[in-house]
Amino acid sequence: MNKYTSIIIQTVPIMMGYIPLGMAFGFLITKSGIDWFIAPIFSLVAFAGAIQFLAIPMLLSGESYLNIAMMTLLVNFRHIFYGVSLFKFVPEGILKRVYFIFCITDENYSLLTSAKNIKTKDALILVFINHLYWVFGALIGALLAGQVEAINGLSFALTALFCVLFLEQYKSNPSIKLFGIAIFSTALASLISPQNFIVVASFLAMLMLFLDFTYSEGKILKNE
Amino acid sequence: MNNSYIYVSMLIIGLVTFILRATPFMLGKKLKNIDFIVYIENKLPVIMMFILTFYAAGLSDAHSIDVVQDQLLALTLTVVMHFMLNNYLASILSGVVFYVYLANSVN
Image 1 (cartoon, rainbow over the protein chains, first blue to last red):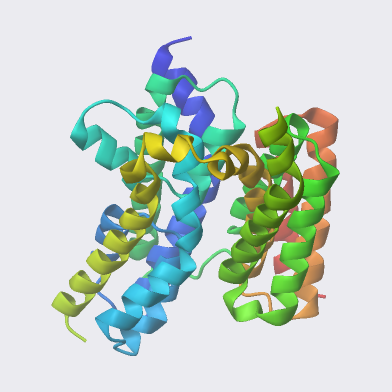
Image 2: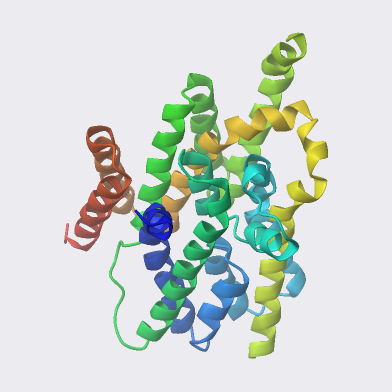
């Protein structure tokens, strides 16, 4: 099998999430009255997922730049921890490096940390192809916004993708404790702050990992 | 609302997100000497995947019990398929097809 074919095959699960979700984004932002060409440009310069959806009501209500920056910081704060698991994939060369880092979305992080057979040097091409899906989806969604009604439910592809990646991660790192932390952070965040779920849940998870590290694992590491 | 306001806003979103993503790389090798960073490197992905599954499920504007029920049913099918066939595509595709069917059928 040709090198590119095998990389493209690895991106197919992401494609199934990005094209429908990108289309949903293009569709919604264009339906809200914003020019159709904004959708693909937005996906090209941000590649930021959920915050792009959240940006639609913020743009419509004319939020200040400071509020938009703060909201982005909160919603995407978890990304500050992603790079730590991806050092080995970073390509040589400043431009390639910057572009790779720009592409560390939830989905690319998930794929690169879950799949076992991705070659380090192929990571850049892989995230680039996924970025194309995202921009292409937004473009198609924007163009369709004037034409059709959306197919209800396609965005479930992303939920299914994360779910499958979770199962794969768990297989290679089975731990009741980690599963417990995941369930606890999810449940508590849904209860105390459903509006800020992702921010609160990832904060709780980090807090519990830190406590676990301080009181058990850290001591084991130090004694080794 | 004019387009220059939108362009500046999208650049801000892109830039803030980029800075967050770039922080660990700017700190670079120094991070590798911190035990806690080494510790979360392997532990965090599995937890984030779980949280993101629920987050994405809620993203599709679940405000009614029907939607939650549909999401859980489709997720169950995805998990079962994954255990049976162990194939990313088959699991995702069956979950999506089932969910689209559920979301569009009249209860």
